[in-house]
Image (cartoon, rainbow, N blue to C red; front, side):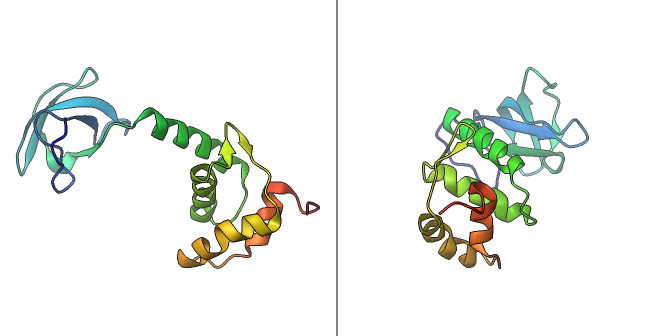
Length: 145
């Protein structure tokens, strides 16, 4: 469906993902059958279509295959970094992927200057106080370039 979400809630007829608080926390595909300001009824192969309070559920759009692949590759790369700031490490992995420099479990080699150019402004704009060349050394090795 192409209807717009309002206040984080999908419209009736929307296919999306839902998680119900108090369960395993996993998001599952569903279709919204009814929704108002307090409750939702949805169909899903994993859960009943009993009404739920909106305060007990979270929605998100269904991820595209490209988004799923990005998440997989970024997640793998993130696990290999040992940078103290996990938000920074994850952001670096996302930026590398979005720049086409991170593919299936491999980071395209960059010189220190190229790496610095890509990340220095972005990282300081995000409020991270980090020596970007130390991050470079962790990814590519201190003896490169």
